[in-house]
Length: 473
Image (cartoon, rainbow, N blue to C red; front, side):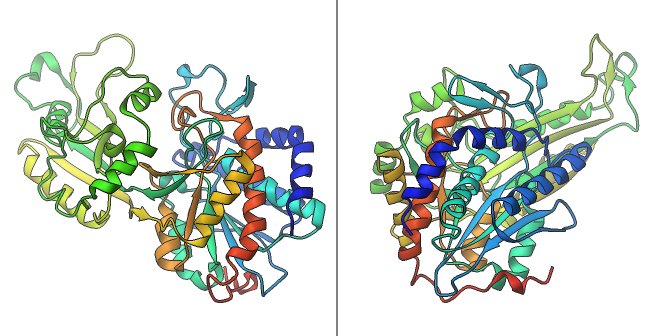
């Protein structure tokens, strides 16, 4: 099935597509905040109804112990290959709200970008594929190949329910390839395919001291402050060289060849570019590695947040009763998230002062991902990018994590194509997140080209996948 008519349709309906994207962006679908539970579910219902309206079959909301999964498929030709399209409709919190130039859930077009939480991560990228599917269905009343869509509302909290579902329904979800658009390009008009992602573990430390807050004049200097203890413990998580100071942490870190590091230096961003994107003047981190290497082939431990004591207006002389820190590990091949979690627990036990109590909560273990750049599914993405953007993509490593990517590889046994449309300055997870509209338009066309080309290139990739009628949920 040739893509010409679908692309013409896409170009003539851009205005409507943007209006619909703005509808999706208005939902404050913050999966980590219980106060937004109804908003997350409402967003899922909107997305399911939208998928049904464009002509997809077997559209359903799959209930979980958390937020629903949105599933839809189009399966007409059992001899054709099957493409699994993944995305997530949940977003991270928009705080600090005071740093936003426009309300985070009231999308605004400024220049050539739409500004809103989720515009880049991941609603805008997800919607590229949804609109590509619509373009084929409106013009041909068919798709070039069979498609299964799985969109979740818990990616930002580690995909706990989807990971269990992939294991349980691996026969049903099996496809010839999976496409995920939740990564970055090099820049405007400069496409990129991600071929590696770091894994991760999230951690929360809680240090408890006195049963209640104490007057700092009466007890300051006589009782160990849990906030002070926590800060001292955090200071012992890194050494003076920028390395993680947990014994055994680097034992399984894979060392890469000079050829790989030289390729990364040619294809990836320079230190100056990364620092410019971060709006900082000076870098930090493990010596002997570039900033790009530090964020991709080297592991990291980051302090994400700290809370304790009095943080409101004015002063309050107290010794806090509790102090909490949130941290996240980014892991690389061949680090095992569960092993790192055990090493961390033992290290915290060693450095916790005897006069306070510390508890450790760990969640969302995610394995690192490496992708075969020569697989037909990946090579097809390169052609699709070139046809849509007029320029062949480069291969880049990503420092982020997509929990389900490793599950698709390991459990379903299928190749994963990380075909992103975000920009380095999209400000994802921060205030004033945005999506570059030319990328949105070309992203739709890239997806159209990919489905058209993959109908042939994926034909012999796997045995016939199962159909959606086998769902037992």
